[in-house]
Length: 470
Image (cartoon, rainbow, N blue to C red; front, side):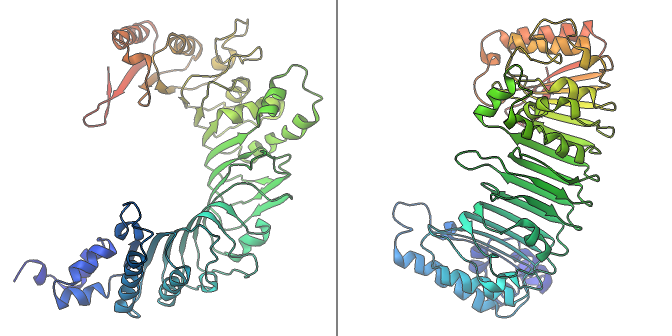
């Protein structure tokens, strides 16, 4: 008797649950006992790429596609009515949509709790109605390359659903204020789509605790009209979108961690940087971005893009004070300016950790005093008033400009205790030029000796991928 044969049925079933469905099916051929346990496996993971290897023309062969669909039919038939916890399905063009409908309805009938679907068909796919009247689904993930129009006329009600992840090129859900009530206990919602419809929107929920919205904008980069957020229980907020014309309501007072990326188009960037732009009608609407930031004023961790700094520079007089903020992380870009940085830092009276993802930014006449790019009498004033103790710099490329910026930070941040500088890992940098790395290490050691804080330069090892100080 082999070791596996001596194990209890529960243990065998648990082992099979860690295998892919195809591997578990092969294992069930070994003996009748394994076949019996396979019929009770609570998790099914079906991926057509496992069967349709990326060989040229194989997906177009009807007999290969048919064998895959027959395999799934046989697996579900073998399991009968046994309970199922998770059903994961990944399939692309060539698989018959009606067969997919049958698989989905089969596991729904068996009381599936967690469903993860990636369906990549050439045409719009309409999911079966039973999907949206399930009384057992707790977690639902949908990914589609084109779109899903599945609740437009269905009156969706999923009373047990707590997690809903949508990743689609576009999603039709009518007004979101009508969509959310269909999920009375929803705690996590993630939506990825192109743009909001052309109307005022309200995102309102009493149960949501985690919300991610990524609206990348359509081809002509139209800004949403207005978006209100009324989510008093929310603790995590990840929002990326073209800046709206208004944010009338921002009930987000319990948010602990926020990631904000507000975007402007090229014309709006030019307008924002132009002198005497106070009477610009377009910018007057976009200055309402301060209302969104005011809604998350109690946040403890804040991650923002440099685009967001450009938006904040438009409404710098209205930026709220972030009294609870302990960690601020800013992602930089060489095409965008730091005009909004000074007022943001001055409005973080209890900030402890500041993280820059790169030190590149666009130098303009309105460049803020947080950098040393433009000579000015108040250079560094916003840094001097900021109580940050720890500074992290990601993506260091070894340029003289970066070293000058680091020196500026060391001279200006009065409470600074530790500086961690992480070398860039992607693409070619000055650190690869012979002798530059040694020179950088020597320069940073001088900084460490001259200034009162601890300065560390870290490089990731190519062997164990760990960061080590130089």
